[in-house]
Length: 305
Image 1 (cartoon, rainbow, N blue to C red):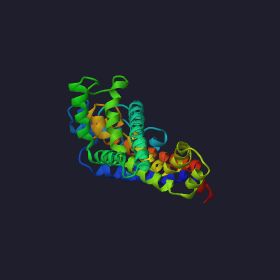
Image 2: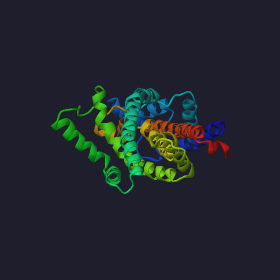
Image 3: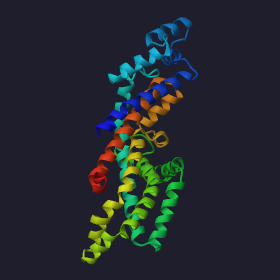
Image 4: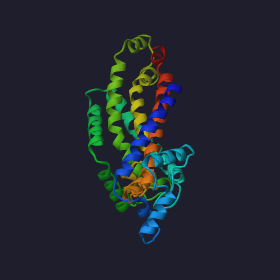
């Protein structure tokens, strides 16, 4: 774990350097964008004064070092469009993204676990065929199309859920189901194939020979090992969700990180984009570290190697 934490440093330095360089290669002057957002006529003198205030009149490498120094003090800069600290904006939107991510993962588990296990227990039967169709729809259906269908039928026609925004727990159901159903298809196929492999091993046959109940064999002995491959995919998905589900958050007007970044991209708010990329890098590395640690706890064979 200490080695992985030390590896985080060059990864973040590389990502931050590349992102900073790409932001300076794009068109548009941040000082002019900031003045237009404040409703000020961007004269040449005003632009130069703002550039000096923001430290944009120096060499690029000095701007990067100054920005990196502020990042080490949890200062990701000031948003050009809102004039508020980027770190504060991300933290204000993180609870909404965390709530949506948790409910999405829960929806994916509630769909994938029973369908995947049932498909593995009855291969070739009607339940297995139904699971294949469900998985096919999951991986094939675009998230934006499913979102619009759910809004039309669940909100407009039946009036069961709010159309958009964050207004109580009922408002999280539609976006969470959209994201959860989109992830469930891969988990269904992965759980099915992994459980089929585990059920054919010798220790499962030995457990049956000892007369253990079938439900105990499945839930305690087989399913624990069968879920290990899904754990790695789970880490990738949860990291992406915590970074903000851009399309779903935008369609449902969910006040999360993804919607905030989309607004920053359209406004050419480069400092927000830089902070978001750095945020995503930290989240991905830490989630992968947590998943690797959890695999060590669940699988003794990894610890022995």
